[in-house]
Image (cartoon, rainbow, N blue to C red; front, top):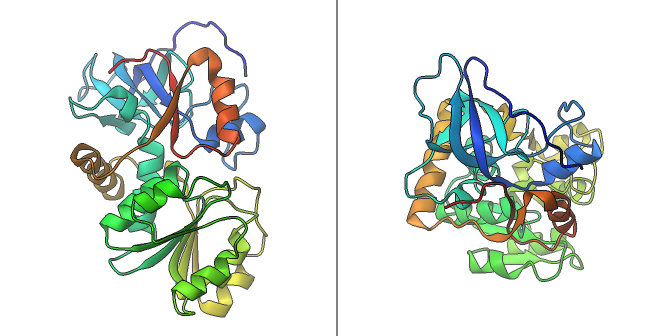
Length: 313
């Protein structure tokens, strides 16, 4: 990655320009840098898929937003590691006036991914038992809180010692370390039945065996491949238990749809009521973006890393 000076971009019709205050760091940023992201990316590129800041300029046809308004967004073409970012106006999240911009850059990708997967994709209900791989990471911690709030029983796995404590404090029943057989532990905890839903962002190291931890008619939601792409023939794993499988990407949810709006409202309400917490571990200046990504790659982060561009609030 290189830091370069360039002219600020201007919004086209239906777009807005944001003076970026903060940009959240996600594993997708690393995959974009490594050219391993499974969705199309054109290079050279500016990474960063969630930002907060204030509206700098409005493109033609945008009348429902105001210059200077505090907002958050998930730019569909990335671009968050920058002082100015262009976002379609329908993808802007208007913020409550009392929400700090630092928090606003830390919730969109992880909390909305967790809520939409939990309720919109897997349709978890009170009484369900769920297994969350990488439960100590940002999405895992959000899934834990949202699932507990919904009345679910939560079991998790972690790959790094020391990341067990926070999920347990948030209501997870058991967190399984790398040295333990998560399939065996799950069957012990569920009386041999298996879990209702598995949420997997790890991929190659966990996804295949997750089918062995799943009950008949259970559902697996895959939303990342941090350890590499898993096996290719998913059919062979679905048939024995009539399981169902989803590969989820937040960018496929249409902003303004009922699924999107319900998730945004639920997450914002949880943040304001403080039963949903985002754990910001460290804030880096823009010229240390590479250090921020290296920290995330260390797999020792139990929360969120954020890039400060014009830090305020």
